[in-house]
Image 1: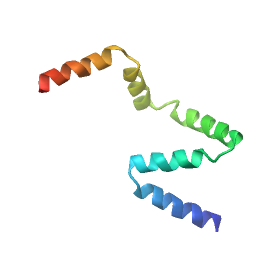
Image 2: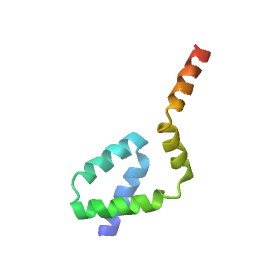
Image 3: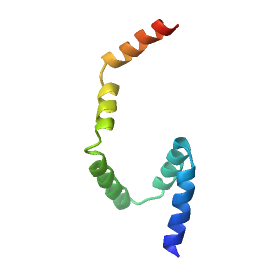
Length: 78
């Protein structure tokens, strides 16, 4: 029965857009214990450790020159 419930929930989740998924996840995460939250943190850190796309995006987000380049591009297209 639990497996079926998880399957239904996963099906709903798959049908939602990224914003809806994020809201649902935050809503669920507000209800977990600290132990569960720590376990999820470790799982996420492990799964994202080798994500090169994320590393590039974080590097750009933390690079003070990146917003300047974006700002310069807005002048080109306006």
